[in-house]
Length: 285
Image 1 (tube, rainbow, N blue to C red):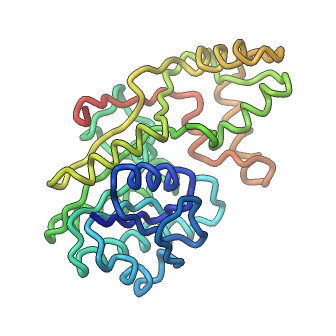
Image 2 (image 1 turned 90 degrees about the vertical axis):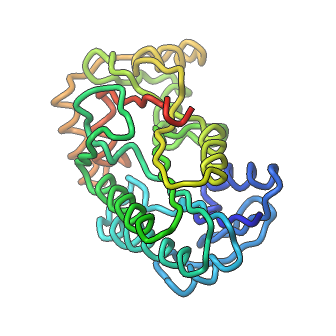
């Protein structure tokens, strides 16, 4: 089978392309930048419907990973890339007779959930621009599923893996230098991650699973933010310690630093760093 991976040159896209090739798929990457893996490459912008249409020609499975990430300061890009781009991809997939589309969404669609663990039908109440844009993408997936396109939604928790730490790169750098690292309040909030390789495997399985569906994907073993960071600092042995900061005041400071351009931490990070959010992944299992 031939698979298209949009955003296949990004960190997670690269992991997914590698796994697909290992499993015998022919892979085409659609991205602004060339991929690391040796495979067919079509350069283009997800907002260009004609380019997206060409990328979808002759493929059976589409894995859609292009997204404007939470760190973006231009809110218009959330709409043009995450919503309009997703519509382009779904429209082209339907027109080209693609058998399956797998849409990588985000746990940000849930905002601050009223209860944990979060399941697939927990109410989606995003509280910042990125989460709202990803939810609009999910709505488009359901719209096109109603028009006969087989679409599965994958919602991952915070992605970590070899070679990429995402926003947590900041904390790792502080630990490397021996600086103290913060938790908000007690730090007892349960924080779930997902390994990029496990997420890639979930997307692979979803691509081979007939019927539109939605799956929450996260690690089965996880702990509190404090325990996770304490384990990290003990392992590193650089003298770093975990220190508590007052929740409300720190969140205000994080938001102010972001809007002043002094910190890369976006609104979603200040919203969730000190709060619990973890999935029940029973449906996926």
